[in-house]
Amino acid sequence: MNMHRRMVTGALLLSTGLLCASLPARAEDPADFFKDKTVRVLVGHPPGGSYDFYARLAADMLRVYLPQAKAVIVENKPGGGGLVATSYFYNQMAKDGTALAVLPETIANTQVMEPEVGKWDVTKLRYIGSFSPVNTAFVRRKNSPSKTPADMKKQETIVGCTGTNAQSYQYPALLKVLDGYKFKMICGYPGANEYSIALERGEIDLVSSAWNSWRVTHKRQLDAGDLVAVIQTGLKRNHELPDVPLMQELVDDPESKQVIEFASAGAMIGRALLAPPGVPEERIAFLRDIFDKMVKDPAMIAMAAQRNLELDPQPGTVVQGYSDAIVKTPPAVVAKAAMAFKG
Image (cartoon, rainbow, N blue to C red; front, side, top):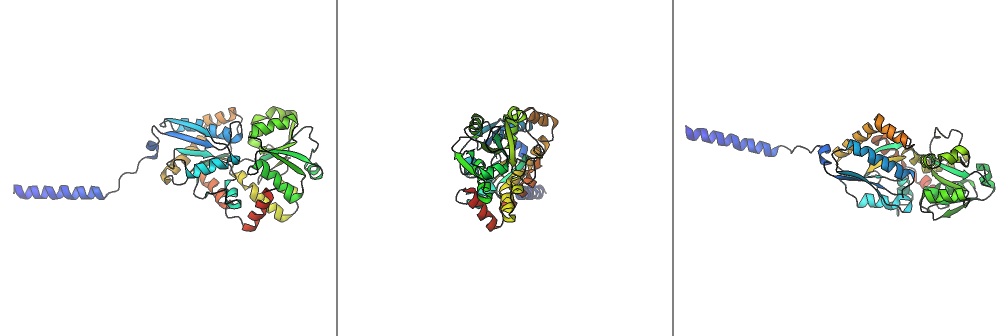
């Protein structure tokens, strides 16, 4: 009897052990994963512009909403109008959720227009959320010889830019090629700070840069009329620039309008937070949930307002849709935009 009891007990223990072994391990809580980890927010531009402003806002918000993390730090890796950082982020940074980035809103455009440069697949990146759409504004100095878009079609206007892969070159190049604007491009400025100084000194007449940045760094000059926004990019006018025309509103040719709208589609992506490919989906969902909560938090909204940063947030899934749509643009439109971007 005792032997029988021992055999039954042994069989039960064995079957229980086999059952436990067959059950899947409990998934790690995404919040627990970040405990004592350092989270890095990469930005592909130097300090002082809107990319950097929003990267630092993201880091400060995450310090509140990821208190279990050991640290949240911002890393600047400028070069190629943000493309050096994009390649580094896609190929080399950690793919576990501890590496995030604020990168150019045009990386999907670059992928389809310049595949030899944009060696990444934006459909594999994961947008966590966008802080704000970002229209680019063409801003002239008060005493620029060309005061209006019509003037800029008739006489030479000197435009400052960082490099030929940056929007500061490419957006003016669109109007130069597609609609005959007499822009003389002077590239080589390291970043927004430098070409803004050149504009104020009178070395150049016009600069194309994010309105989100202009409204922070040059509010006094804009309010005084020393600097004037004359053209903007995007799919709809910024609410602060209701009387400033969109690029596509300045051209008559329907195909040129379509090309400009493709080139401007990244404005809806704006200043967004991304994760690289390969991050487990449960962590992406966790980070997207955190993002949606923190951009609605009154304390976080106040933080952005103190820095004069616009908050018009969109969820990561919505932004992902904008990005994925860009890579589905008809090849003929992409080819014409690529040609125009070369000036």
